Length: 362
Image 1 (cartoon, rainbow, N blue to C red):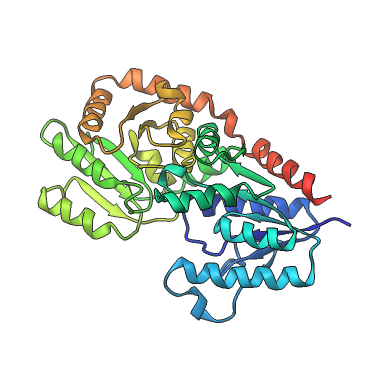
Image 2 (image 1 turned 30 degrees about the horizontal axis):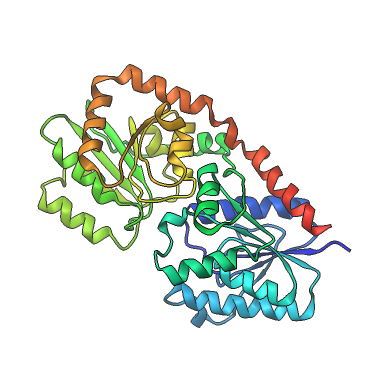
């Protein structure tokens, strides 16, 4: 008798992790007889198809910190496992919690890690717990080769890498939606998309453009929302950048990316940043930090875009000026990135997920 698949993701917050969760889950639901989702969210029915959603009825569990969501979802997982152990668990979040529960019940579990261990706790005790816990999983999936190497080096964990599935046709279609052109004529059009949090480090972009604001005409658009919004607004006002920078949020940034000349990623760490893949699919020239993990892999170690050190706004400002003076070279680099997107093919990488699941579910 085939095992049921449980997908475990307590908190769905709208970032790259969640984007891949929706894509992978909906794909697996077309291939498997029974898929169950355990989450604390109660608003996913329109985004999830042919999947039974198990969530807490009380809004108490959806308030405040993630930890509360983790606790209730662990309880829901235990409740299901007490009734049926013919189950495979695929976890996208709260991995250690889910791994420990599954091992207590003798259940197979596949853990998908989403962002580089460089961004995890630097506490020795916590890292020791990670090392023990992750090695209990039946399989660890990561989304880049560099990420795989980091997991081995830091936690002695053997993992497999499956790239994020990139649907180029969908990105192109979404980019054709008509939106207002936010860039004035005859300016360098710069854009960055991501949550406004310390990890994404948009303050480095603002410092970079502040250094060159008197050297060229440009407009910067930051698309995102998050707890660093006030910090960024204060820097913009303090440095008289209000006419040069616009910050807002939209669930469909692709039309704005299409309008831009340069896409900048300033993250301190990633896993495999979807937004770089999407920008490359739209043939945008990319400038990114050399953060672990993903950008160097996507940009072919600098052949497909420029790379700068984390938080080095001076280097970033020089690279923006480099684009302005070397547009032909930079457009050729963007074409190289586009030509090498086959590694991230949508169907090929989804099939890899299904192949892994099949090994455990039959």
